[in-house]
Image (cartoon, rainbow, N blue to C red):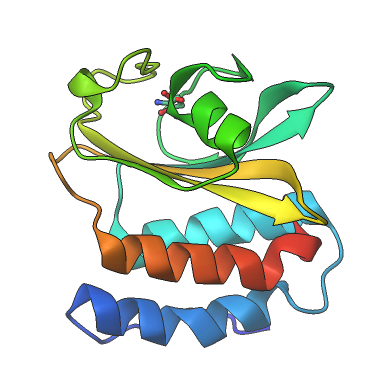
Length: 159
Ligand code: SME
C-alpha cells in the first residue's frame, strides 16, 4: 500500500484520474470495510479538501454514521430522509447544487452549501452511501459524479 498520496495535477478531472489507481491500491488487499471506508474518506479529503467526506452504512434499515473526515455529524438517518436517505431509497447518486433548495435536507453543519451522495451498491442492494459536502454553492458536477461513482463501484465489495 502506498504510504502517501502523490497528487500533482491541478484540474479536478486530472486529480481524480491521478487519485483513482492510488485509491485502488490503498484498499486492495484489505478486507475490513471500516478500515477501507476510513482510508477512502482520508484520500478524498486530502485530494480535494472538501468540507466533509464520509460514509453512512445501512444497519438494520437505517443509515448509521461510518468513517468520515470533517466536523461532527448526525449519527442516524432514516430511509428517504435528507439527501443521504433519498440516495439510499432511489439507489442513485444525488447532486445537490444548493442544499437550502433540497426539501428535507439534513443540516449537520450550517456551513455546508452543496452536496453529493453516491450509493454503494453490492448485489443490487445499497450497503452504504458516500456523502460529500462543500461549503461552496454548486461545487459538484458531472466530473465528480462520474469519478466518484467509478471509485465507489470499483471498491464496493471491499466496503
Ligand atoms: N446533509 C445530509 C446529512 C449528512 S451530513 O451532511 C454529514 C443529508 O441531508 O442527508
